[in-house]
Length: 110
Image 1 (tube, one colour):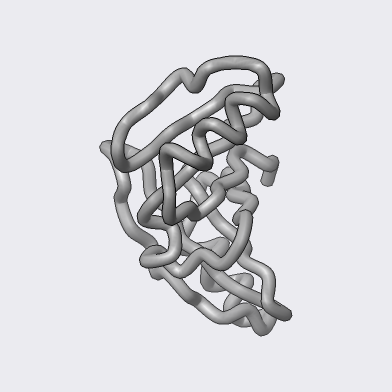
Image 2 (spheres, rainbow, N blue to C red; image 1 turned 180 degrees about the vertical axis):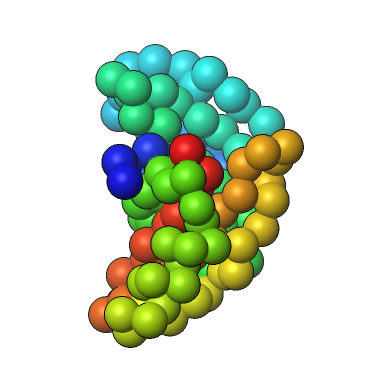
């Protein structure tokens, strides 16, 4: 697996976008009411106003995997708690979220 995305759940998308745009020094490549995305040196950084409802607490790194359900099962068997079961968020893009020791782990289709 490789790190594919870092997703920040936000409650005030406009305020978060202003801060992250200042931090990165570039405008987002995607700017919608449900997702704001930046590509920083090949890493997707996302602001997600629905993140809290998707089981995310704090910034969530998403790891790319060819088998979200299989990876989810492996991590759950190792002791992680599923907080968001697999969900298709776009055609061909499925994600899931787990937690362990207060930290979120995201999985996303590669």
